[in-house]
Length: 86
Image 1: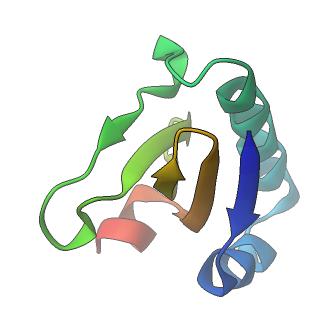
Image 2 (image 1 turned 45 degrees about the vertical axis):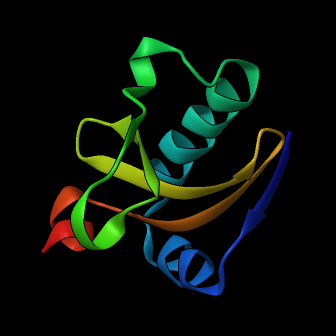
């Protein structure tokens, strides 16, 4: 699977603390191995974030991504639930 990052993702990543970064990396590693793992609670978003998908990286940490095709995704945003959904 090919994974790219959006510049907004990169900026948000830099603001995460080390623990959050490690949680996000662990979730992405699991996502690469098995996109449908139930631990990740992957689901398509609605409203202004449609057609993006969300990954639950930790209890209060989410990763939004856009599926380009079956083998490529672009990571769009990362942060707490409040940071992403206001």
